[in-house]
Amino acid sequence: MIFLNKNKTIFWILSIYLILVSTLYCNDIDYVLRRGDKLQIIYMDIDQNNNFIEKNDIFTIRDNGTIRHAIMGNIKLSDKTIDEAETFLFSKMERFFTNPSISIILLEKNSINVLLYGAVNNGGILKTSPQIKIAEFLLSEGKLKTEADLTNIQIIKSNGDKYLFNLPNFLYKNETKNNILLENDDKVIIPSYADRNFTNIVSDDFILKFGNILKISLFENSEGLSSEKNSDVLTIDNEGYIYHNMVGKAHIGGMTIVSAEQLIQSMAANYLKDPVAQINLVSINTRNVYIFGEVSNPGYHPLQGSVRLAEFIAKSAGGMKNDANIKKIQVTRKDGTKHFFNFEDFLFDRKDIGNILLEDGDRIIVPSKNIGLSYRIANAFRRYYWILQFLTTSISLYILVETVK
Image 1 (cartoon, rainbow, N blue to C red):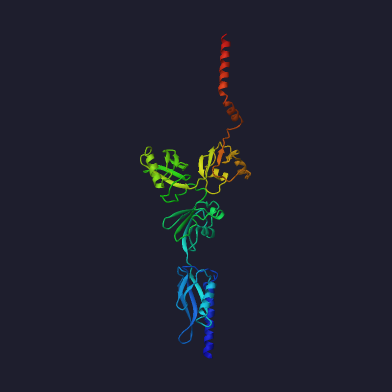
Image 2: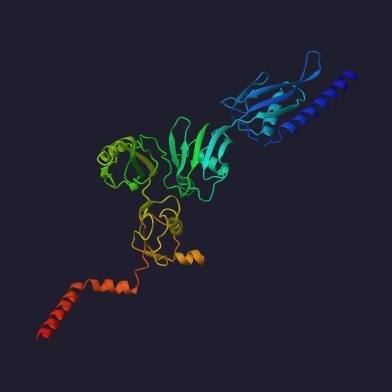
C-alpha cells in the first residue's frame, strides 16, 4: 500500500511538472504543426521495477506529415494544433498505459527565409511559413508603403528564374497567374510608382513583343553608362518597330533582349566608335499615356498602377515649364471625351476636381500662357494673311502713284 501511494505521489508530481514545462516552453497550443517542425514528446512510463519514470523523445515531422514513435509507430501530426496533437497522442497512449500523461514541446518551427526589398517598411530577410504563396506572404508579412506599385511585383527565385505578379488583379479579378509558392532564399522586390526605369526584371531570353515599354541606353564602351544623354523610353509598336533618336527605326519585335541589344549596337556603330547597347524592360503591358506641351519630359509614358493626373505630371512628366498654363490642362480620352484640370486650384486650394485617374491612351495637353486672346485673334487672322498682304501692297502702290502725279 505504501509503495502504491508513493508511486501515485511521484506520478502526480511528474504530471504537474509536465504541465509546467508545457506552459513554459509552448504557450501557443493553437499553433498548427507542419512538415519540418521539430518537437519533443514527453510522457510517463514504468520501468522494470514498476517505478514511474519520465521519457522524452525528439522528432522532426517528416514530409508526409508523420513521425515514427517507438511505441505507437507511424503517427500523423501535421495539420493538427499542439492541443489537438496532445489529445490525439493521449488516445493512442491509452492502449499501453492506464492513465498516460503526455505533453508536446515545440522546439523549432519550420520556416524559410525570403528577402523582401523595395517600397516596404519591413525590408530585409523575413522568416515565413513554407508552402506559402506570394499573395499570402505579402498580405500577412509585408508592410507595404503607399507608393508601392503592386502591379509589378518581382519574384526572383533562388535558381535565377524571374516572375511578375499583379496583386490587384489577384484580389479583384481573381487572376492567379504567377501566384507561385515561395521557397527558401527567394527574393521579392516591390517597386514604387515613381520608379519608371526599374532594373530589368526578366531573363535575357525574354521575347520582346508589341506593347513592351523599353529603356534603351547607348554609350561608348570606354565611358560606361555614366550618363543617360542617349537614353530613350520607347514602346514597341504593333508591327514590332521602335524609333530611337540616334539609330532611327529598328524592328526588334520577336527578338530576345540580347539579340535586340546586339542589333541596336550594330546600328549605333555608324555614330559611336565602340558602342554598347543596354535594354531594360520598363513595363510588359500596353498602358500608355501621352503628354504634350509645356512639360519637361513630353511624349508617351507607361502607366504603373493607379496614377492620378497631378501625380503623373509631377513625377513621370518631370514637372511643368515656367510658361505652362497650369489652369487649363486638358485630358482627352480614347472615346473623345475631354476633362479639364486646374493645377493651381489643386495646389493652393486643395480642389481635386479634375484630378482624374489616368487610363490607357489618355492624351494630356499642358498649354502655354501665351495662348491668350491676342494670340487667338492673330491665329484666326493668319489664314487670311495673303489677303491682307495683297491689300497692303495695293494701297501702298496706290499711294505711290498718287504721290508721283
